[in-house]
Length: 159
Image (cartoon, rainbow, N blue to C red):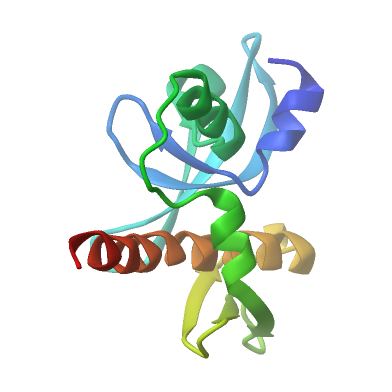
């Protein structure tokens, strides 16, 4: 993977191929023994956030565009939710960073007025960057829309 491709990974949802831990890529590292590393920010079972450094080849990145292309390439045409449908549902966004912390909250407002939230925080305050925090919090909030819209679609299909 090139440096350019690594930069494109920032803020994307990813999964550790070995442990199955899922989270958001929040930072890139210098090459260690020839292998680039990424930091995966993931929620622990107690709800706290943890940061895990992983070799890039140990990470599976959820790239919606690749998945969309694969679905279309296989000719799958049944009713489904698409990334564009998720994005079209969002009509507003607000952010809050709690004073003295790196905790960033994003609140997305959907067409029907319902709201979803996402969060981002750094274990090391020295790593805090407001723009990256907003990007990650927005992505985490957006991920919560998928099951809501899936539920809506399933209701429509079963009617």
